Amino acid sequence: MTSYETIHVEVKDNRIGILTLNRPDKRNAISIRMRREISSCLNGWEDSDAVGLVILIGQGDTFSAGFDFSEFAHPERFDELLASSSQYHRDVWNFPKPTIAVVNGPALGGGFDLATLCDIRIGSESCAFAHPEIKFGAPPIITPLRWIVGEGLARDLCLTGRRILAPEAHRIGLVSQVVEKGLLLKRTVE
Image (cartoon, rainbow, N blue to C red; front, top):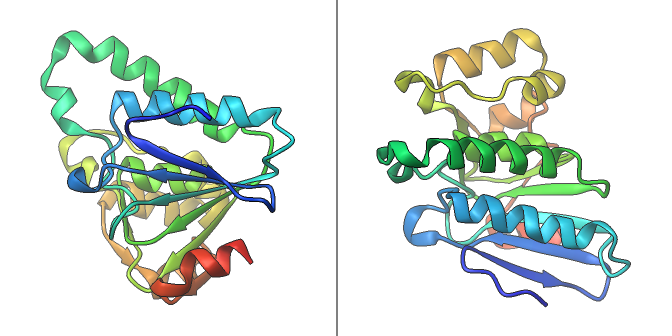
């Protein structure tokens, strides 16, 4: 099995691949390296008979704080940022097997986008979603969100950056269920 720096991967006997965003010290911020590692992992699992479903979860108390903004301080990396972002979004979106985002805490900005690119989202009682990057002029991905919650609500969430918590996320269909944090991964695997 391939070793990664920013994600941890595990394949269970029941054909479930678990991909853990593993930068808890950075609130699982999605860096160029992480995007490439997620793409590499999913590309490896695409034709694998050992994996029939993929669960994505964040290490610690955060699903993902979004893109690693420290990388945006380096203009010479802009092309690399754009290319890795576009490729990773396509790889998650087009992955041919079911994907479940286990949102174990805040999913902000690019973390919110990652969750919406998955087929199913299950949240903990402490899950939260927001696009705070809109305040800095960075556009969120609206298309999968509007398919999930509807055009008007997707525009509201993307253009205001307001935060929604687990009860509202469940009410609007963003998460299919809310599970006690200690049972989240176990219930998802079941």
